[in-house]
View 1 (cartoon, helix red, strand yellow):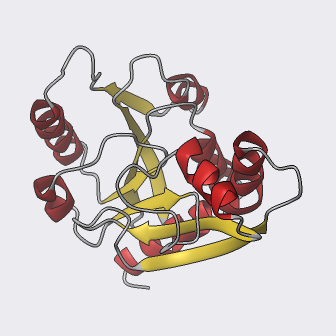
View 2 (cartoon, rainbow, N blue to C red; view 1 turned 30 degrees about the horizontal axis):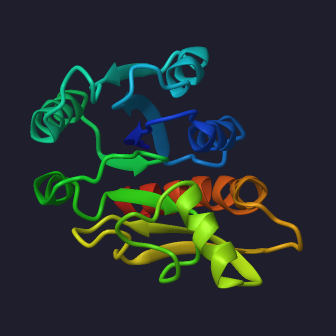
Length: 201
């Protein structure tokens, strides 16, 4: 059976990439082959993680290539050259253009650290999401994996998982719990769901 060739785009530590790789090693992503890691940050720790798995990495650094358009064109050309079928955004901090999204329409997914449609959209990323959730006083938050469309965090939802907010939570403690209990669980599941669909299963 032909596997779907997957690229993971990441700007930081790569904990979500790690969750995908752990699931893959456990045989939980049988229809996907994670074969490329792309980052826009030359200092991203995800590069070290990828090295451990002998996965090819490509760096299109924001500092050395300040033009988003240039970075994107180089990324798209690289993804095409590598024969990538599916793109996973796992903490990728650059908002992608319509052109990029159209090139992978229905084949590009993102993980967001809240239960969309709450706490999402422009400016809602990283700790900002958890600060907003705590400021609002919600008792339940979580994570969402969705298809990427031109509307920021507006694409069809694939999976969601709820996480309880606890008394005394800080944005940092909440961020860790949402990662551990939701993001790291549903992102690998969504990768397999989409890959199996692309395989026609």
